[in-house]
Length: 96
Image (cartoon, rainbow, N blue to C red; front, side, top):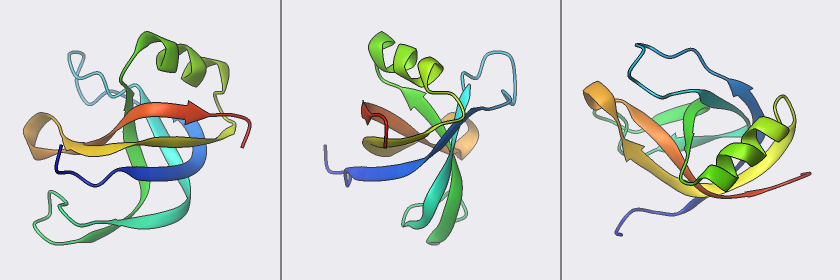
């Protein structure tokens, strides 16, 4: 993987799916914004709210159990549907 691994901290909330078949069920309200160097806008963009997706069932369970709480997550910004970007969570630490 040539992508940069990121550690983000913020409050996990339920997101609203843009369509029934697009599984963007979680969002992370970031404590500190970061710059997405490969944003879908075509230039680096400051991000303070990201769609997030768990990479495993155990991470999904941890997200559900920490809803509306501050957490720390590690993962990658990846390309999603229709040139969107989301954060794929590979590990989660709680409580922050």
